[in-house]
Length: 275
Ligand code: SAM
Image (cartoon, rainbow, N blue to C red; front, top):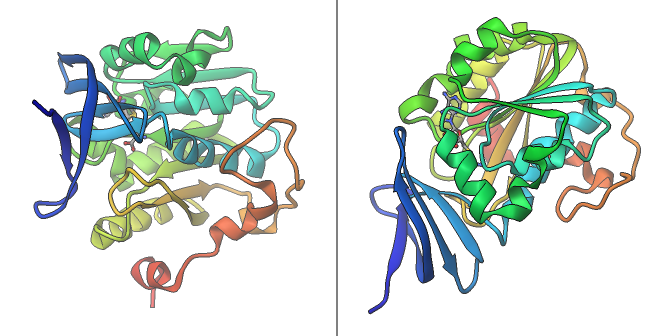
């Protein structure tokens, strides 16, 4: 008998994977965790039947949420990642000469699952520069300061992640950043949820001097076309000189395209920019 896992991206659209092997399932305190192998997308991690990552396309998301802010900043020492318990973002952040990485993940079970079943993604979590806090990121940012970079690698705005998309949270993140600090957040898809993307953009722009959305293709996320948004207190990312190469390999991020990532397709400009 065939087993399929599906994510309802909207009430009318679902993405389904035929399961080659069911690897692991667990109901944690916060969410239903499932791990399974597929023919075409490799190993998949779902939380509450929503795709978090696949080993086939995770690099697209993790490289873009990390290298764009870090290479814009150019001198980051202390980095905070909120959410991101799979470790993919931390793995990319550690490719930079940073001194300290704090990961704040509400659900310890996600970290444990990734350590066990996604070694190529969680590999940075045992690095001595990384400290993991099992706490709510919304509260954490109110009490910790002095970060050069804050990355919001959260689930969609449901359950404990709702507050990670509020204007007040973005203000707290801004206060947690040093004077030349930069935030990058995953900010959902304009293809299926234009109003949500606009609301998030307005929240970020109420908290930062510079608000710069950028985009990437992530085939297994809803709409397959994803936005991230950079909020910066004093660095204008568009006036920054970007060195056109990195001293590490990337598969999606290309420094030659760094500034071009901020050039938005007109349909997205129409959604977010004030008329
Ligand atoms: N890249 C993924 C995506 O967009 O689908 C997100 C991956 S990562 C696994 C998201 C993590 O955020 C989850 O492990 C979840 O437990 C965590 N999370 C949700 N709300 C949180 C909160 N308030 N504080 C800290 N972590 C939170």
